[in-house]
Image (cartoon, rainbow, N blue to C red):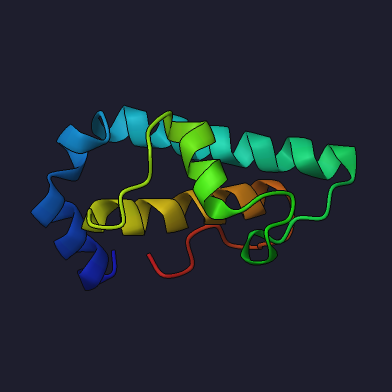
Amino acid sequence: MHQNYQALFAEAGAEVLLGGVDGLRSELATASRLGGEARARGAKVDLDEGQPFDIYTLYVQVTNRAYDRARHLDELYILLLAHAYEFGAGVREDPLPDL
């Protein structure tokens, strides 16, 4: 795992804040499934351009909590969810290329 990601997870107590590894896996799977559903509907998928919605909407939809820019873990987590969504939609080959 990339050192910066390790530091973020360690500092924030990721396992506690995210409901553990199972919670993380479940939310990444949900994001990927939603991406697959968008692809099946023929929706354009480009979260950077807000298609079909922006990454903040995806974050709330998957986690059921508001995104907090001040939390370093949220900064990392929103990117993980976006990668999983785009992977599910078939627009990204590797969902986590930096890890």
